[in-house]
Image (cartoon, rainbow, N blue to C red; front, side, top):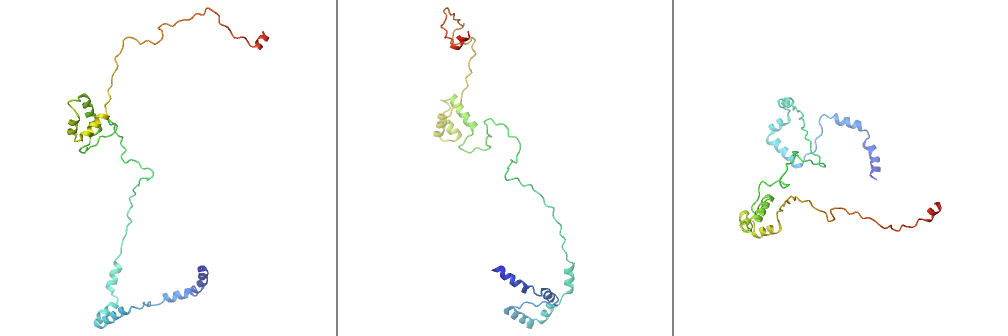
Length: 204
């Protein structure tokens, strides 16, 4: 429906459009919009109280007009700095240095809070406790590292350090379960042979 109405209204809107546009452009002074009632009251009061200032405001200031013509703005384009943004689909580490080999596979923290120990420290006091169980017990470890004694007891109970035992070299060679010298069995009696098939007998 709207399209039909616009098709009907367009010819009337565009009728004599060029001549109407020239008429508006050729006007010396455009007709101002009507003022609000309150604004008109203020202008009338200004004309009565300050007629000289009102007449001066209507005149064109030639000096001010020259100053406005002399003012100009020069703009220069700033060369944009292109920053290559990382691809969100392929995030790569910013530090590409190779990571060194650590003793226990992970890097030891720089700061260890109170009541916590590193893996290296835990292995040290577990090993020392296994070697000196009487002098270096759970109570002494608890006081040294500020950890609850019950926690230390559980660590010493469920975690142990493996010990390596290297076997001594034997001078005598190991023997197999069987006899040292192989035995040869001599068959003195002939064994029964299976009968030949019938086809073989006919050929012979």
